[in-house]
Image 1: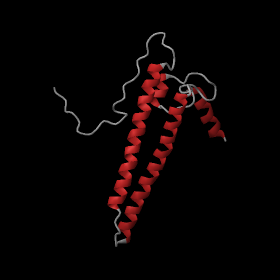
Image 2: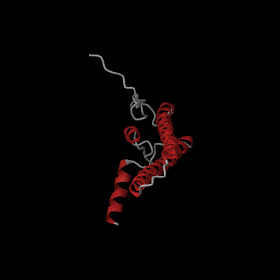
Image 3: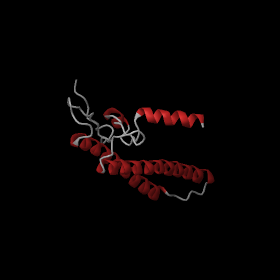
Image 4: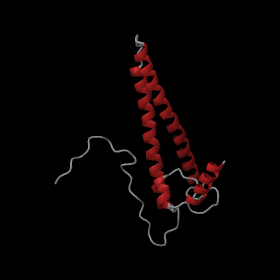
Length: 145
């Protein structure tokens, strides 16, 4: 049965292809770095496009409604959109930091203990800076404080 091709553009997440490790391959070699670099850059590009859409949307839809309820609804919509973009701005900063870590050969290694974070963890969270053990320990400490 033929499948219909989606008319919507693929997001970076949809276009993701897991890295296939080769036996005896060195961790964070050129191929792995290229794999994660493409993931990070595609993700950043997608987020930047959302920022542009928001600016355009807010300019185009900024209407001075005479009805206070309509005006309040629009302001709430804009506030929600701005909060989302603020979270994405912080994520873009983390993506940039990950790219810098890659340039300095530190990407993929835990900033706390120095061990490999792991390919699958980085694919799930490309901006991860800690191995799963250190992250879990931090979260437990955070819960008890």
